[in-house]
Amino acid sequence: MMKRSLSHFIYLLTAAVLLNTACVTMQVSPVSGNKRVYGYSWEQEKQIGAESDQEIIRQYGIYDDPELTEYVNRLGQELVKVSHFNREDTPQQYKDTDFTFRVLNSPVVNAFALPGGYVYVTRGLLTHLENEAQLMVVLGHEIGHVAARHASQRAAEQQLGQLAIIGGAVLGQSLGLDGGNILQLSSQTAQLLFLSYSRDDERESDKLGVEYSAMDGYAAEEGARFFESLKRISEKSGQAIPSHLSSHPDPGEREQNIPKMAAEWESKGYDMEKVDEDDFMKMINGLMYGENPREGFERDGMFYHPDMEFKFPVPDGFSVINQPSAVILVNETQDAVVQFSLDNENETPEASVKAFLSQEGVETLESDQGNVNGYANYTAEASVVTEDGTSLWVDISAIEFSGMIFRFLSYTTADKTNEYRGAFNKVSSGFSKLTDSSILSIQPVRLQVTKTQRSGSFSSFLPNPLPMGIEPEDIAILNQVSLDQTISRGTLIKIPKQ
Image 1 (cartoon, rainbow, N blue to C red):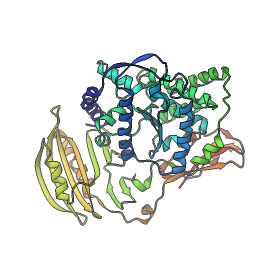
Image 2: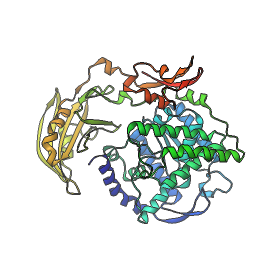
Image 3: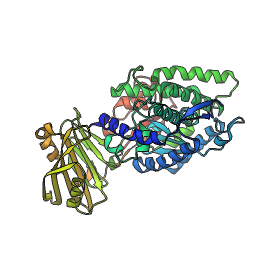
């Protein structure tokens, strides 16, 4: 029941719900003007987008920078004006569609869209762009998904029995979703986030992204440099997917095709000169880079949360997935999970644990009341049998701390109980108050945009050491250069500062 299997399970669970709401019909496409098969009416798509938008906001949070948000929104609205939603031959039902553009508080490099006119970019994506032209290609790509109604087309295919493959977000990078996180979302929103477009869908959106940005006067070929960055991010993380296995076109393919498509629009007489590096760099100066340590981070086998002033150990071999709603610890072989979360529903540790134990299918093995490092605590062990017949052993522990109830939910397969019992106990019993002043006062890393006063290799401009475990190659990718590349005097570069 790790990330992939949980995602797959929830996908199967929710597919029926969504397919029951879909109704395959032939409708006019705002892009081609021809009739296509869709799973929803346009009014349904707008309603689905509005409902899911509120969940996205609650789950991932909006980056707290109104000026940056307004900047992204203004640029997005410019593209909507030249898109297929506002042309002479646009069918009336699509004209003047309201679009919403949001900046999500996520360090992951990505962007995605929901049906009906909701477009999201992460702060992580913005840090990896170099100018407005690149941003416009990305925003145009997302508007293209909405205009082509790709989600509705995929829903229609599913209704016809062609189940879509679960994939990452729109640009081919993981949005950082995990099983514990998806469980907080409705079936509709979870389905939308895990619905992967076909390669043809992605290529059509690439084409539309170039078209819209070119018509707005931007140097659309700049978008190719961003896809080169995506390729480098994937290669560095070791998660590059062979093009024949991915639902997204290979970033290298897109890197080559975008300049060709841009040249076609230039040959049609469009003035594509706007790059606007200065304006863009001014807007992202001070933008948070990477994880926000104020919201929790792991260092040397310990998870710290400076804002809430607690800490707990992370067992050897476990990775940390820190999400707004929960902290997930998962081991390398993905057969043991610890989920740590705030329980807002119950007022005591005992009530928190018993609320879990009272669920259907949960068999209590033993329970006990006590304390952890001076804090009231209630623990229990339980057995759960999943729908596929797998027997799980569950260790649950709730702790009262600073007027709040925190809960550790740890589980593995029944045959691995003795193997992981000690690791699970180490986590929950190690929960304690954070008192280290250097960690309590830690601040996030932010980008500092500077103009070079000399020429030199890019690596010569990097501080030593870099903060928060950031590697030199990360900053080179961030600036779309190589470490040994010569940077001319007067060049704007982005350097992380803490």
